[in-house]
Amino acid sequence: MDVKTIMVIGAGQMGSGIAQVCAMAGYDVFLHDISQQQLDKGLANIEKLLSRQVEKGKLTEEEKEATLSRLTPSTDLQNAAKADLVIEAVVENMDVKTKLFAQLDEIAPPHTILATNTSSLPITEIASATKRPEKVIGMHFMNPVPVMKLVEIIRGLATADEVYETIEAITRKLNKVPVEVNDFPGFISNRVLMPMINEAIYALYEGVATKEAIDEVMKLGMNHPMGPLTLADFIGLDTCLYIMETLHEGFGDDKYRPCPLLRKYVKAGWLGRKTGRGFYTYD
Ligand code: NAI
Image 1 (cartoon, rainbow, N blue to C red):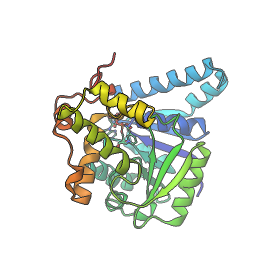
Image 2 (cartoon, rainbow, N blue to C red):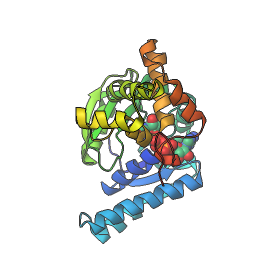
Image 3 (cartoon, helix red, strand yellow):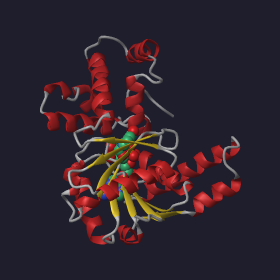
Image 4 (tube, protein in one colour):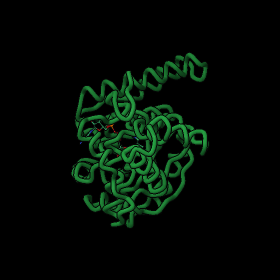
């Protein structure tokens, strides 16, 4: 399947990174968001990251300009009519995603593949909101997208082999490594990672140690590059909570119960780095 134009939906932390790597790989990209402010922020972030690459000598000024020229901002979902592949990266919420996929199914041409960057939600359920479940697939990038090599690729129950192969080939073209995973809540990455983060939050909640101590133990003791609470702030505490809720609901096992402290922080709007405050504070 020939893919030339990609539409990335959601210009947040993940969507802007995905749009950047797609444009760098030579695809024409629409970066779409419902919020003009988020769109401006996402594009400014891409420009900043590309300029940094130029300063480091990893990219020429011409390559930077060519990448930016392939990016078109969008607040009109009708642009999906021009896309061969849509990669959705909006908030981790099943209602929001299914509504969006139903709309995309109406707007996008029949050949268009609809991929989701969901961290944990079942691909099969998202696909069922469309009349083309064979063209719906999970394409789970890691944060920060321009740096991290892995893309978890998740087939829904109905995903066609041809669609899987196309997405695998595109992932390699983006200079990333595809790994195939079956469609179960949290896939592999977040099924393993998120309960560890949740347990670290429980340890803080129960007063077992300070946040700094918890992070230090996991960094120095387990050789993790970042402590779990720092990582949670980096991912976004709202996203962490959504993922724990998906695991809890999907497996029905209480070992996945989100920590009350995580709920409290999300209710307070302390979502981590992106809002300037989570377990830690940021400028
Ligand atoms: P974010 O909160 O930074 O960005 C979400 C963006 O979606 C916002 O700009 C918002 O305005 C936009 N949006 C919301 N509803 C929309 C709609 N109906 N149409 C268009 N735009 C809409 O969130 P983030 O961190 O980028 O996460 C996005 C997705 O990526 C989630 O599904 C998340 O689970 C997944 N993900 C997140 C990772 C992380 O480390 N944060 C890692 C891998 C996947």
